[in-house]
Image (tube, rainbow, N blue to C red; front, top):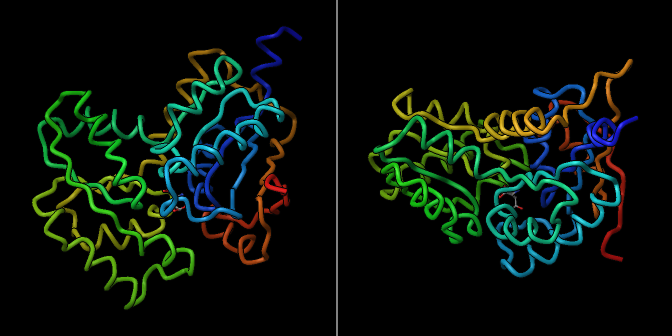
Length: 275
Ligand code: DGL
């Protein structure tokens, strides 16, 4: 087997603070059904959205060591907070051993193409919003996107508790979206792994007047384009690939939540990275 071929058949590594990144893994698995995924959810340190940049960077580097030991050909940071806090550092750390991808650049490119010169809203964790990373990237694109961001820290725990479409969740969603910071937007970026699960409720709030953008689709498309350009697409095998889903702390509740985020329940394997 040639080097390029054996590299192509290595897995894609993904990591997140927990199981929310499974929305990204799901989009990647649907788009690239022949790719083997190795997913790491750092459930021992959940949530990243309230952590310092330094803490997230330290976690991310150690998780990348694990994914490199698993021979991953690419590492996708399947978490907005970690992409905001650690992408540059991780990219430098991993070097030529694997390509590092994040969940921010593909949606920034998409917005730049479709909403140039427009007012665009963004919701995410405190870490993501306070990092200002989206604003910096839009400013660098220089296509006149006027970004209005709002931290919405109640949404991720609410979704984890399966509060998606009831009176309480609808009230919380409406109260965030009515914030003056988001007035006059024409599109809204869902800058958190959990938010695709409440996209129908957000769409209902805006009644079609605002384009609600689920980044996971753009991320999966970007991953596919990168692998194709580098000749790194896995060749189809006789059976579907076997994915691995590791977590740094295991509870049955995490496993049950995989159904919510991945669309089907998957078996979580405990990998006590921090012991
Ligand atoms: N995965 C995180 C993100 O996308 C949300 C959950 C957390 O705060 O850890 O920002």
